[in-house]
Length: 93
Image 1 (cartoon, rainbow, N blue to C red):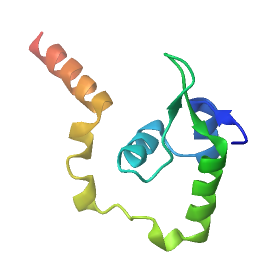
Image 2 (spheres, one colour):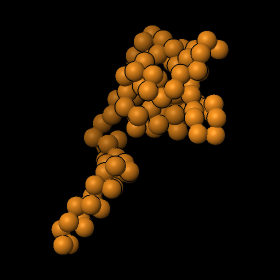
Image 3 (cartoon, rainbow, N blue to C red):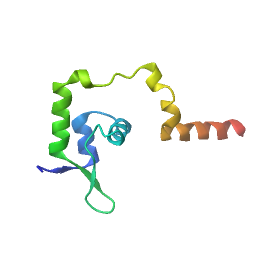
Image 4 (cartoon, helix red, strand yellow):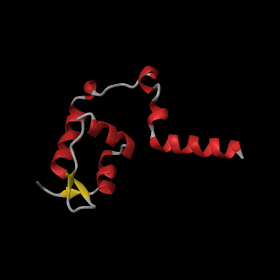
């Protein structure tokens, strides 16, 4: 392993949102994080770079999101859930 990269650096490397990386990681399509301490996680830099190299070499494997894929996406996003709850509370006042 070359180095362990923290979230901020990893996101700078891959240029994807944190939400997208989390979804890819859950689906087993992105390198798994590992703990550095009880409150800190990191990614193996070699694995992240290999993932980027694979994406660049195999763009046909990248899944294209269709409207059907996106249906329900906002309902599942925790940030959208919180925003909807705040809006509902404001409307009730």
